[in-house]
Amino acid sequence: MTPVELSRTVLRAVRRAVDVGELSVSVPASVAVTPPGPGGCGDYATNIALRLAGPAGRPAREVADVLRPHIADASGVADVTVTGPGFLNITLGGGASAALVEEVLEQGTRYGHGDTLAGQVVELRVPYDTRAEVVADTLVRIVATQGGRAEVRHAEPVNLRPVPAPENPAPLGLDAARWALLHPAPHDRPRISADHLLQRESNPLFRVRYAHARTRALRRNAATLGFTGAPASLGAPPADRPTDGPVVHTGALTHARRTDASSGPPVSGPPVSGPPVSGPRAPGTPTPPHEAELLVALAEYPHVLRVAARDRGPDRVARHLVVTADALLGFQHVVLPFGDEKPSAAHRARLALAEAAGTVLAGGLSLLGISAPEHL
Image (tube, rainbow, N blue to C red):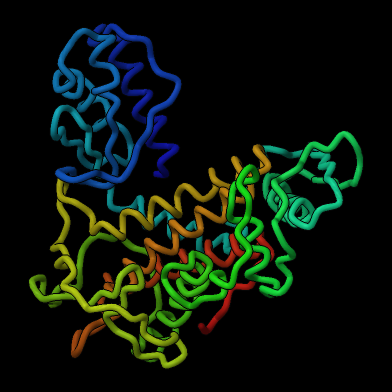
């Protein structure tokens, strides 16, 4: 179940509660579902009860208690817990994450493509400007992912005029130049500097391309250890992995095990103790944070493509790739076995999730016209 589908599930629960007279409110047009915050649990959380408390004239906890059984009865929902002032924390059934990962791996770089613009011709009239032409070139591919066709012309009146770059980005090279022009929102002035070439975690382009390379390195390392990825229920650690030992981190670029010399040099920074790996997950217990963030990022990618095509905003794709990369880089340290540990079903499931993330990163970079390296 994707966040969009879960949002609809929560809306149906509200409508059902209203229909049977348990709540007297107007059903909202949309509901936000997000990874649980501090003190939360499960896969997703929603503040719908807090939103409806005022109109209903009842405490948010009471509203949450009314909605909880209606959400819990929905297909694909394993458990619903009320926390804090009235947050509804939702744990999905065990097959939900596996189905998402399997869908990404089956569709490959076409994952997220749809037909919302099928049969439509999007006319892009641009000025003679480097940034406008790069944005238009990228939109041709993004619009095509939704079944539409974009036609680019130099004509008046112009309907696509992003803020021009202050200088020629060509000296940065193709990949960095395109990122410098596409990552900022169209109304923001792009920054043309050598910072886009730095191999540091402060550089979003480096993090995205490095994360893609890491997914390929994880697959190569797993093959060396004799196993491959297989989508399955996530959230549980390998049975004999210790849960109280430290995990080595270096900022966003976490690396607990690096067996492939091609995976790039270590990123500087003092190692610190990371959170312990969680035990087997039961309803009401949290998913490991980066795993949940990564699953949400994968599930939201089709929506990001639709919005980018509709709003002519390739920057939305670029920013979502950064979110996906950061989640992957925080998750990667639990993918491979440690020490004498034997590969397990959990390792195979986590490798499949990492490979799915790599697929989304590769697809997104391709749409932006930027290369996705196998080694970095």
